[in-house]
Figure 1 (cartoon, rainbow, N blue to C red):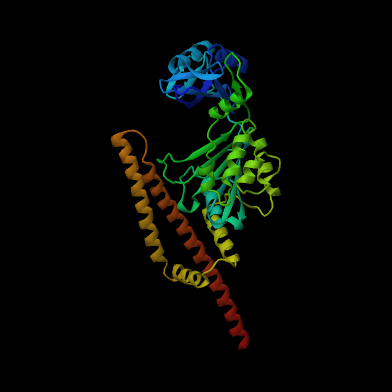
Figure 2: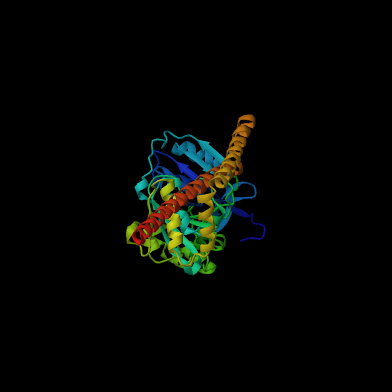
Length: 412
């Protein structure tokens, strides 16, 4: 490439058309002399598109085997939209000449499977199941001090109500109809856009302008149009990940989706069974050492969490638990007052977020909303734990008292 050649950067977007098929889109791009990478997402009538754009906002074509500036980006978007009767967005440019929409599209939630790699305690999963009103399964990975939380189908997902500090950092793997996305979550702030997502499409293909291009040059241009792997960012939230192997695996998986994700999961250091599970080849119940939690009410969730803690010999602090039990049983008013204060503070924060929205317009303050809701939920959980513990201790004391009374009567 000549020294005075323009610099090109990758721009991405989509083409949405209810009339145009792959061949029609390919032909339109080729006739316009555009070099492009297309992908097939799971949403009907949609195609992802990536092109190279110069500093002067001109879309790259190929002349004499080298990149050269072609159509202006806005002109390309307009021509594609009008010719294909489509809604086209590439980078900052958009034009909608669509002849229909996919508003009636209903996702096939039965095909959705999600795995969340998180440092959250397994004892909090029953409460998460209750709050999200969905079945959650958890597999402990003690060698990396992480848990894999599994769920499938429609419903609220982990993170929809905000991320707690103990859940972060997390890696979210979503499999849907052959497509696999990997998201690195490092912040619990809903207003924070630091989330990094890599999507492995189930199918991708190149569109080449007319003219001769060498195979080596084609490989270079295909790599230039490929989405970044974000291997470094994904590795930061995944203990024992091999960054170099992950980068190669993500790049090699282009167009294979979840079917070719085995090397990706291996580079992340995740269990071998996760790939077949994400593809729907094995049931959750067939996963080794899995524990399934059903949403059965807050009190039940708290009871299960406490029982799991008591059954775990690795959990320290029996003296603390005895002190806690004694306090909530003999001085319940202390905890009730604390719970009321915490719930009141949470309600005040939620109220402040709503008030700001009414006064200023626009969206809710994510930080205030998450903090307020978190305080309210935490207060409710602690109240349920205290109530459950007190009732359990009173029953135990009644049994002990009855046993002592029988012994005294027998001694007489």
